[in-house]
Image (cartoon, rainbow, N blue to C red):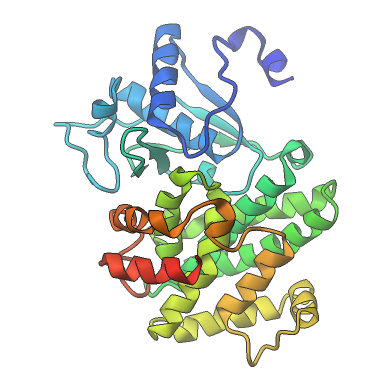
Length: 351
């Protein structure tokens, strides 16, 4: 229907990209778009497509046609880029998201190097979409597992903001608003996947969930490790389901953000639908910590809770730990993550 509506304006179509936005696929699209003379990109789908479009637009602006040339553009390991000058993305992007991870609201793009398996966070002057179109009914076509897991990724954005020692009032307010929409909305769509009002609430929650990143409030180790866990074959949203409760417990054990975690826990208990199932699961507000509450939320939604469940065994922990240390979110964790041993401690908690 979208292709028909755009008619003769369409000069090329790409159906799908692999999860975590591979360099090889970005470069394929760059070649096709350049040859066709594309002057806009429209995405319909999940976050890998959105990040891909952002990376393609940036590559086109800077004539980056190879893996090595992509790596000269600004990213988390190479802040300013190694080119004499980097041009801003100019081709506009229109995004029609069908998942909830929120990449359409940021000027960053997570893209994976096929050669090394490392996921790079490309950064401004890369630009996000110029127009975002929300259609709750359209998201019914999204597999429910993908919908719920990416919704929990958005929850992760909120929780790591509210637990951050570097956040500010506006970011905290946005994250709190988002949680109050996202968690009830996810529970309602799990119960009834055709509930478009609940789906739209989730989509509105994502807008607030992305406010902190755009205020340069960076998340913590759940995101940092998750960025590198994804290319091991784990869904983007699933990484949050596995890591977030353990990261919260790790930070609490090290007394890094105890009061901020208490605030988030209180906020979650105050949501009636959350309180109801927490009590049903035998938890009490006095005895359950934030990690316990998040664990219960994730299990209630039927998502994986261990690395074993997604096929990542201990034999891969060392590689994952080393790769994770390069991510820009590790130093901004409430307990700054600087050593392999710290990552290994978290991984053991969610083995």
